[in-house]
Length: 116
Length: 111
Image (cartoon, rainbow over all chains, first blue to last red; front, side, top):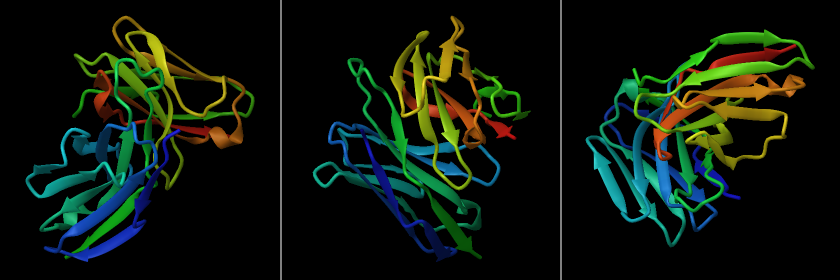
């Protein structure tokens, strides 16, 4: 089955700096890669996702890049703010109508701290 | 708010008992996935229901079972509870499996 590894486990940056979180996946058939932000005591919140037919997607200060050949994808947050502090999870899955096992595998998470 | 709700919020059970958790999906969504999240870890996929049929299952034993109803709400049932079942149980609804939106979760404690 799919295995997702996420690095680093903790990341501390100064407000205004950029933050990059990287994930690798094992199953080359994976074609959907979402990122979630989870604040303490709250539900995971979808912040951005990318499908395998594109290499990059941006939404304001957040961007995700995907390298299918190397089987890794990354989350980039620019101009970080204290409210970006949270745990971030990457995930990978195979989404296809014929797939008999639609599961989403999550990375272990990255705790991002943005210092004012 | 995403519209996905779960009940109950918290639950305390004794080892060996059975529990049922409920999830109401967001309007317009036809797929519900259930996850177990232990403290300090990422969500672990339990199973997914699409139009009332299970169409994906993670590495969880058969004592974890579920249902999806015609209105796309869902239940997670766990039999013969074990101490290691203590965790936050999250459901997520989506349209066809993409863009999953999570509910607030049910915190289960097994003593």
